[in-house]
Length: 336
Image (tube, rainbow, N blue to C red; front, top):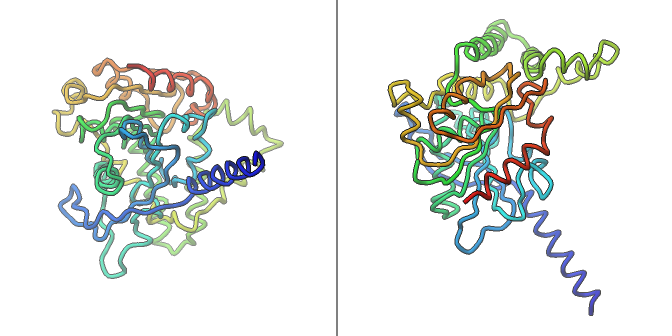
């Protein structure tokens, strides 16, 4: 009898674990964009982890980062990971344009894919949570890099919908420095296309730019000394069958226009007055991809909790101090 009970327990545990890895899709219909154009038959990819409580008060939204898909986030979820799924119901959502959710690569052949914004991503995610998952309020939203942009945009767009927000490797507003980086990436793609360059060769150049800026020179030289350069060189050739250069341009353009102060006289002070969620903002002092200064400015205006990481891991600083970040995030989520 005990053996049967044990086997049943294992069966249900494995079934639940398997179910949490399943890619799901929600249809939000025709999505009106900020531009006034329509994204027809919009579908949003997502995965869920943990259990939603009876009050539906423990749901946390986790949007994907630039070029990321929901499958990439799985390694950050669990009892000893960035977010503890034993207490929370995590909705990992594929941001528009990532090749899983509606993107240029899976859109209509007859209609050009329209330009989208971070706000459009948030609007699609709001509809997924409210209309498809039937959750009327989120306990929290967490996101890194482009995911942080969505987290910031969410608490401004829907101030009464979320209790807490954790943007990490964070940016509430793109600076000129980021626009230079994004412009370089766009130029690599457009010039490559103009002269008939192979898709994989274009991606290789983009990967080199990312590898150059994702970490500091000190970190790169320590982890990849000259005699091990071939290890980092292998990363130059990484490609994705779904995240093409067209997807690259879609999400770069969305980030290029990112600015949560745009409707508040370009003022962090005025923007902060509109935010009701409690904020915990994590930035890297050595971030070369996203300038941490705007995040610290909105933190000061909103009287937000902050964590400034001082390691040499740059944009990837959270991954280098996972134990600290997990502990501080857990504390923040448990605060009354």
